[in-house]
Amino acid sequence: MTNPHGTPIWYELATADPDASKAFYDHVIGWTIDAVPAMPGMDYRMIDTAGGGHVGGVMRLTDEMVKGGAKPGWFFYIGVDDVDATVDRLKAAGGGVIMPPWTIDGVGRMALVTDPQGNPFYVMRGASDENSNAFERTGMGKCNWNELTTTDQQGAHAFYADVFGWTYPDKMPMGEMGDYVFVEAAGTTIGATMTATEAGQPTGWRFYFRTPDIDAAAASVGEQGGTVLTGPMAVPGGDRIIVATDTHGVVFGAVGPGN
Image (cartoon, rainbow, N blue to C red; front, side, top):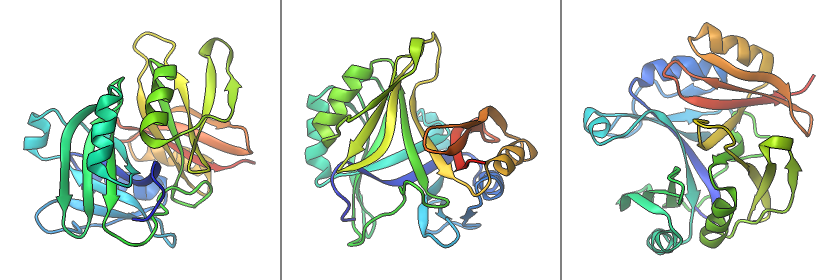
């Protein structure tokens, strides 16, 4: 993929039950997740956004993965110019490596890594000569926003700036919760960071996917066995969001037009 270094290029749900995840997200977000695996030798299913291409994939967690510590969750892939050089740089900046670089023929080279606070993500250089549009600020079914909750906001800023060239052009004060700091990658605002201010507060990356009707999405969450944790609520810019869990307790966000 030819996306600029440091930009999000793919989103992936790790789950023990892809069929149940398909039923949930197809109904809540409006996706069409493959009913059968797209690749031989592993249960990996593509997520179609119904007219806008793919936003990512769904990977079945095998028993071996679970024994190795893998858990259900959403992850993203950050596109880089050179995976091996990026892994070396992030290690020098205090990051960690969960799975060192490997190559899948026809797909690309990638590694599963963490920032200094232990939050996991992938880095990848895709084999395709086309740009990924998995992240689009207003793309229907796409990821519209990437949000990091961290125990060390300043440290995270320094790390991602060093490794990926991210900048932080603006912020929104949130009182006792600190500042909501916007993240820019290659000239595009891709999300924001915030500080975990309460003991036991979940940390890590959260992703918001666009739906045409946020109230319908919120209702669908409960119908499909998930739980709405926050919202629907208005956010700056005119959209409304929810934060919810799916049937396996995985947290995700959805965003839709305001009233």
